[in-house]
Length: 464
Ligand code: HEM
Image (cartoon, rainbow, N blue to C red; front, side, top):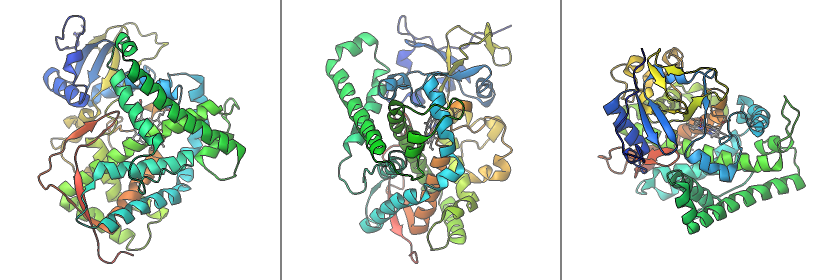
C-alpha cells in the first residue's frame, strides 16, 4: 500500500509558490521539512517538486539507473548564456559528452598539480593585501575570497587576469556575470508573459550575456591565432579530442565552457572558504589545531604542492564545512527519460510519485541525518571527517559535489585551491571575528555564503 506524499496546502492556481521566500529558498525548504518531514511535495508553476531530506531517500534518488539530473529554475535560464555547456546541458546532449570526455583528464590530479603555481601566485596577492592593510582592517570575508577564487579560475580556465586585488570596482566581465546570475534567479520565478512585459530587464539580460560571450569568443579567437604549447585547460579545449568520437570541441562550446567554469567555479569555492573561516574563528581550538598542523608540516617556508596531501586535519575541516554548509544546497533530479518504471514508487515501496514530478534534496539536512552522523550531527567536529571515519561513511552520506556522471568536474581544482589557501593563510595570520557575537546568516543566490561576516587578520611572528 502506498501513502500520499505530504504536501503543504498552497493556494488555488499558484500552488505553493508563496511557501518559498525568493530571497532565502533554502530556509523555506528547511522550514517546510521541519513541519512535513523528510519527504514532501510542492506544487509549483514549473510542476511538482518532491523535496527529500534524509539519507535513505536521498540515497535512493542518487541511483543513476533510475534517476538523472534535470534542468530547472535558474539553470534553465542560464542556458541563454551558456547553452549546452557542461553545467547546463540536458542529459544526453552531444556537446556535453564531447566536452566531458575531452576535459576529464585536464581535471585529473596531475593536471591540477600543474595549476599550483598560478593558484599560488593569486593567493600571494591576497596575503600581501591583508598583510599591508594590517590587523585593524575589517576584511569582508566572502568578498575577498570571491576575488581569490575568481582570479584563480580566470587564469586557469581562460588565461585571463582580472586583477581583482588591484582594482577598486569589478572587471566588466565579472560585473556582467554577476548580473546574469542574479537575473537568472529572478527570471526563474517569473511567468513567461511577465518576462515579455519587462522589456528593459530583458534587454539588460541580453546585453550582459553579450559581454560574456563576446569576451570569451575573443579569447578563443586570440588563442587560435597565437597558439602555444603550454599545458593548460584552454589548450586542452582548443586542441584536445574526445577519445570516444574523435571530435574536437567547437569554438562555441569552448566559449560556453570558459564562462561555465567561471560561473561554477568561483562562488562555490569562495563560499567554502568563507564558511570554513567562520567555523575556525567560532571554534578557536580547531583553529589552533589546524595552525599547529601547518606549523609542523610546512613550518615557515613556502607551501609546496607536496605538503597538501600531508594535512589530514585541514582536509577534515574542509569536509566538515561542506557537510554542514554545502555551497550548492541541492540539485534537481528526475526519472530517466527512457524509464520503464511505471508507476514510480520510492521510499521502500511507500510513496507513489505523480508523473512528471521532479526531485530535489535539502543537502544540508541529508548531511545532518542523525542516523548517519549521530546526535551531534549539527555540530562542527572535524575529527569525524578524518580518513578513518570518512572512508567508512555510508554511500551518498556526504555529497557536496553532486552525483554520478553529472558530478562536479572541478572538484580536484576546488580542493587544491582551498587546501592551499587555508594552509598559507593559517601560516601567515591569526584570525578573529570583527563581531565576537556574530551569528551565522546566509546569503543565497545560485550558491550560499555567510552574510556580513567580517574578520581581522594579524601577521604571525616569524613567517618569511
Ligand atoms: C557541477 C559543487 C567547484 C565546475 C557541480 C555540481 C555540484 C558542484 C553540486 C552538480 C550540479 C548539478 O547537479 O546540477 C561544487 C562545489 C565546489 C565546486 C561545492 C567548490 C567547493 C567547482 C570548480 C569548477 C566547477 C572550481 C571549475 C573548475 C563544475 C562544472 C559542473 C559542476 C563544469 C557541471 C558538471 C557536469 O554536469 O558535467 N559542482 N563545485 N565546480 N561543477 Fe562544481
